Image (cartoon, rainbow, N blue to C red; front, side, top):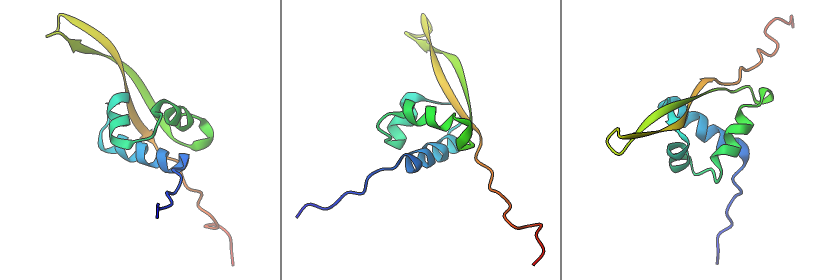
Length: 95
């Protein structure tokens, strides 16, 4: 009997990518995709960059060596700057 697989939600994918970027700052798209198994890492990163999610991601293009530095190519690298901040709830309300 085949087991029922739970659908992988976008929120779970975002959490995996955020955890990976915390452990590996400056990761490339290829590294993130291999480690997090998101299906489409560019879609996940574009959702994370929306202001409504609360994540702050820095993107930088770096020159990566090819062919023993005879050639180079620019590769996008990503850093997780901030996670969403939680509301403080009823911290200042009197009971």
